[in-house]
Picture 1 (cartoon, rainbow over the protein chains, first blue to last red):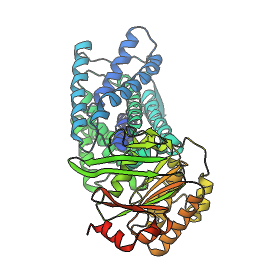
Picture 2 (cartoon, rainbow over the protein chains, first blue to last red):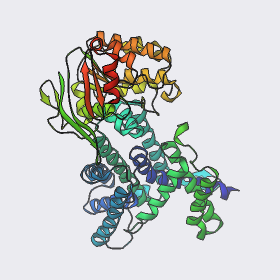
Picture 3 (tube, chains in turn cyan, orange):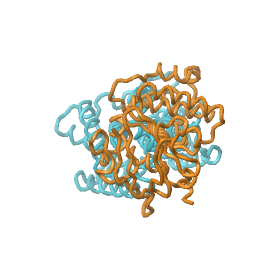
Picture 4 (cartoon, helix red, strand yellow):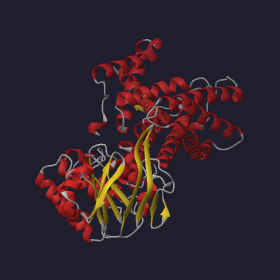
Length: 288
Length: 231
C-alpha cells in the first residue's frame, strides 16, 4: 500500500515537471493556434545554455536569471522575424518552420556540446529529500519544481485574466481581425506570447537538467509529453495543462512501478484513454 | 474630414470596389445603401485598414492613411462596428468594453459609465459572458465597445441585421445620442427607411461603384430603386 502512495506522490511531482514543459506550449497554442515542434529542443537548449554558463563559473541560480530573459528575447525575435511572416489561415508553413528549427537546434547542440549526457549541478539541494514517515520521502527539487509550475500558472493566469494586456491576449485569441480594430497590434502580441513561452521553457530546462541527465537528442520526447499534457488538460486552460501533466506523470510512475519497461508506454496509454473518453480533454476552454 | 479617392479593393483576384470617391464632414451622418454584394462592407473594411488599399486612396484630415494597419487607424479616431457583432466570446460584457478602450488615444465623452448610461441593460449584465446575450444586446455591446475608443468617426456595418423592429428602434435612438455628442457616423444599411431617417446624406453603391448620391429628402423612390438594382 505504502509503495503505491509513494508511486502516486512521485508521479504527481513528475507531473509538475511535465506541466512546466507543457505550459509554454499551451500558451502558444491558446493564443496563436500554433504548434511549436521545436518546443522540446528549446527546453534542452535552455538547459545547455545554463550548463555552459555554470561551466564559466556562474552560480547555478544566476544562470537561471540570465537564461530566462535570454530565452524570452529569443522567442520574441523568432516570432517577429520569422513566424509572424507565415502566420495565416494555413497552419502548415509555421509548423514546417518550427520543424526545421527543431532539427537546427538539435544538430547545433550536438555540434557544440557533443552527444555526452550532462546534468546541472544545483549543489546540496540536488539529492535532498523530505521524509514523510513510513519510509516515504519526497525530493526537495521535484517539490520545488511542482511549486514553480503552480506559481507560473498562477502568475500567467493573473496576467491573462486581470490586466489590460491579458485582455488583449484573450481578445486576439478569440478573433484576431476584430482585435486589430480595437487597436491591438496582433503581431506584437504574438511576439510577446512566444517570448513568454520560451521564458517558461528556460525554467523547464533548469528543472530538466537538475532532475535528470540530458543530451541534445531528448527534445522531441519532452515535446511529446508536453503535447500530451496539453491535450489531456484541454486546449486553452492552464490549470488543465497542470492536471494533464500530472496525469502523464502519475501514469508513468504507476507503469514503472508495475514493470520499469512500461514507464513511457503507460504515459502514452493514459493519453489515449483520456482522448477516447473525453476527446476535448479534462478541462476544455468552454468551462474555463 | 474623411475622404476616399478612387478607392479600390480586392479579395484575391476578385475586385470588390472600383474607385469609390467619398467624403464625410465633421459631425455628419452618411448612409451607404445598396444591394447585397455591392461592396458596402468592403468599403468600411478598407477604410478601417482590414483590407489592403492604395496608399493615397484614404485621407483623414488631409493625411494619407492608406498604408496604416487597422490597429493604427483606430488610434486616429476611426472605429468600426463590424457586421455580425463579432464580440470576443471568451470575454465578459465588461471585458469586451474594456478591450475597446485598448486603442484609446484621446479623451472624449465615452467611458464605462457613459456607455452603461447609454445602454442600461449592460450594467446589470456586465459580468455575463458575451455569448449569453441576445442578438440585440450583443449589437449594443459591439457599439459600446467601439465607442470606448472615443472615436471621432464611427463606422457602423449593418446594425439592424437580424434584429427585431423594437430592438432596431432602441439602437437607432442610441445612435441619435451618439451623433449629438459630435461623433460623425458612416452607416452601412440594408434597412433603407432607418438609414434614410438618420442620414444627412446618402450614397448608393452598386457592384463596387457609387450609383447615386444626395440628401435623403432629394432622392426619389424611383431614383433609389434604379440605383439599387441598376435597372
